[in-house]
Amino acid sequence: MNSIQPQPTLCLTTDPDFLGLALAELRAAAPRAVIQAELEAGVLLVTGADFFELAEAWRRRPPIFVRHICPVMAVYELPGSADDLERLQDQIVTDFGPLLDPEFSFSIQTRVQPGLLYKPFDVNKPVSAAVTRAVGAPLDVRNPTQILSILIARLSNSQFSALVGLSLTAHNLSDWAGGKRRFAREKGQVSRAEFKLLEALETFRIDLPPRGVALDLGASPGGWTRVLRQREQYVTAVDPGELDPRVTADSRVRHLRMLAETYLADEPDQFDVIVNDMRMDARDSARLMSAYADQLYPGGVVIMTLKLPEYNREPILHNAFEILRERYEIAGARHLFHNRSEITVYLKK
Image: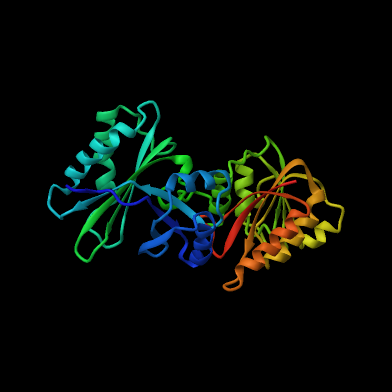
């Protein structure tokens, strides 16, 4: 099995709908970067950028629209024979075993280009076992410190290749392969919008205060309120629409059937946490959130989404940020896996 050492290369993943904005972030951080290939929609092979320099810069100040990156340190040809995966496993152990730190946990994250013969599990299981035997590093797929990334793709019309790299989890922008953070659907779940708040809490590493008081603006049908209640928050849910009966049955949920603007004008309470997933123009949502800044306790946090139109997104987003910065520190902003035409913003007072 031949190993081809390319020039410094990485794989970058973004939502295809935000590709232009993600490429602008790449060009700003690595002006010499070149898109070598688009392996599938939103999955790009990049040359001319040093992964570790870029990753460290983005670790300190994460991009909004680039969802995941991983290094490509070696490319192995897969001729299509029955022993391809066994030979790949042996080659990875030989080349990357000495680079893995046996004191820290690791995980294998495999992605396979659609339509190809292999499945991620077919690669993950034998490679993980071989690395554990050879190196002794503990396998931890949920909270690894170091990640061996494997991308199996067709780089020519007839040739499969495995693109492999090793990095710290903190340098990949996401703990999950391709940034695809999936949650299991729970019994009692009100809406899929719950995944957005769960992902935001995890991505921004937000710990809500024990038995805190929270305000959910535009709460209907109650998915975000349910997530807040799971984290022991006493919730005021503001929305003229109905909430799911399973949410209103909770005695620690107060539902005020009114507009957020009406509640603000009625001498509202103060809160540890304010969340807002309302469907409105990003600039209007930012103005509303700024008006609510006085209702946030010192040390309180805001999690909100900013809905973006199909066109002219960048200036609208910048305008919304300018409005928010008048009252808040923008502690984080990302287009998360469970976002659609929106980004999630984490604010501190």
